[in-house]
Image (cartoon, rainbow, N blue to C red; front, side):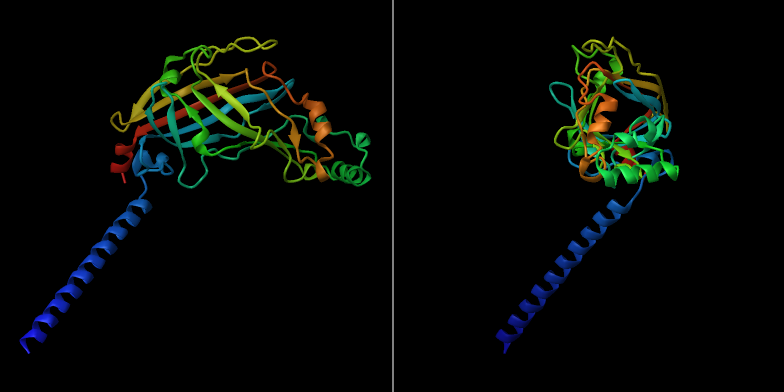
Amino acid sequence: MQKHRIMGQAGTNSSRRFVMAAALVALAALGMASSALATPGGEFAVFKQCPIGTEGLKGCVVSRTESGEIKIGSTAVPIVATQTLQGGFGNPNAEGSQQFYGAKNGETFSKTAQKVPGGLLDFVKCNEIKNIIVKIACEAVFENGLTGVNAVTELAAPASSIYFNEGVLELEAPFPPYPPALTLPVKIKLENPLLGSECYIGSNSEPIELSLTTGATSPPAPNKSIKGKLGEITSKSEGEILVIKHNTLVGNAFAVGKAHGCGLLGVLDGLIEAKLGLPSAAGKNTAVLNNTVEQAGHNAVEESE
């Protein structure tokens, strides 16, 4: 009888330990979920998409490009609508570059439409289209006044492929011989009903490598050297948030590849390429990005939650 009581007590103790362990696991899971749902407060709210908790994360960054232009050959698209780059970065490696971590919501580089001056008229002449179906569609687009074209610069690779070098950015170091401050692997989507939903310049397999610097460039001819600038450094939240206003990143040594998927079965690729001179070799294209940058250490961002 006593043996049965001992065995019963052992079973009860085992059950209690199991319940306690399960409760601890549940509490831990609840804590992690709460942490994941927490958002930075006050002036740190700008970093709400920073991937806090990611191993290797040093700080959070948000860079808003408010003006500038992307120029391919002789065709320039002004930046009027604000485009945002956001996420986090790691500690510098031996060469000074830092791992870039994408935004929590996946929107590391916002897909912001910029109007192309001249619209479709500057890209396409309906009488030059040989495919009769596309030609009829082209005429219908012009008759209905649907001639506006938007250019949307998108990432063409994972956020981890972004090259970031905080030290070079702050030094206004010339590129080359120094590395760039920022390199974005991108593709440019052209939007218009006639062009379809998959009309791109550059691609995931052949991205446009926008290598940008705050220093002076040294491009191939015919481009000449241009210079960016660090801008004005200020801070807020008792110095925990670094703010750089009127920052200018420039690059004019990148190449631009072919057009893909423009129009029905890509029949308009050739017209787009003829207009822009694609593929366009390094030394014929330019990017000027005027930004406001905010960054903070991950601990300060986390403590604000």
